[in-house]
Length: 357
Image 1 (cartoon, rainbow, N blue to C red):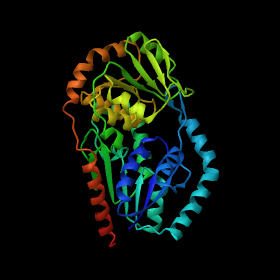
Image 2: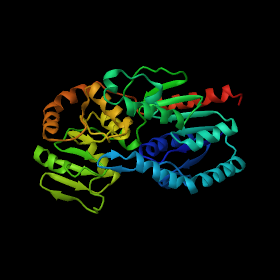
Image 3: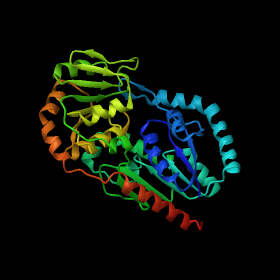
Image 4: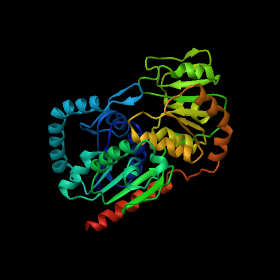
């Protein structure tokens, strides 16, 4: 069977998850990948030929999504991006002729499936916003951002035969053709043996976190920090703070041996921390509801704290509660990626059958 697999390029979590699914599907099927942004380069290094397409991007400043700047940025990109995508779609239809389409929050692939009347399976974490019910406490103070995010999510991959949603929290499903499965984790995380060390892993990538290092320094916690210093080629030690250049092996080691994690609200790192039973302080990007949602469910489950900003009081409270969060995390478990991958294969078979293929 021929499968067209689309991966959105905004945020690397989509690419790392898709890598696992693609590894599984490529054993039995011929797969063609379309991806935008950094996802295209990441997947090309592992799977060879990847069709790079244009995709939407976000503009960040002061730890917040800038909606106006993002709109302008995407309008400019669309001038050349959309015609290029249309040409790519025509080429794929003629040269590859897929039997089924899978989309990890990628609109190009979803549109291709609709135009060619192909079965479509969505595999991502963000559909949880639209296809599950969230109680008032989770949405408190976020109603406007929630409604906007839900409208965007609904428009990104419409009309799929089935939505497979990866997650570490399980709100009630309120749409048909929707299945929640455990987070899909990269092999390096599944192979990692969790140990409770002394340091805190800190991962922040957005601009506007200039105050965070001082707060961390005053906390007295030894920290290994990724993302805040993009210019590094070697570790830079500043008292109890160690700034590190990104290395996947070093990052996984620091995560598996961490005492706790301070991060944004990105799904991938939060799900990895939950799997490895690491207490979490989540400081999501303002204006990005999906990150706020993830952070609030971390807090709801007792796995850590949600905070709009980091200050001395927040870090102090988090430090005191680390043992409490570690205890709650002991109750979390999953059998690797087995359930998620089996579900995806089942939904592929079901979608093909529904389309008479």
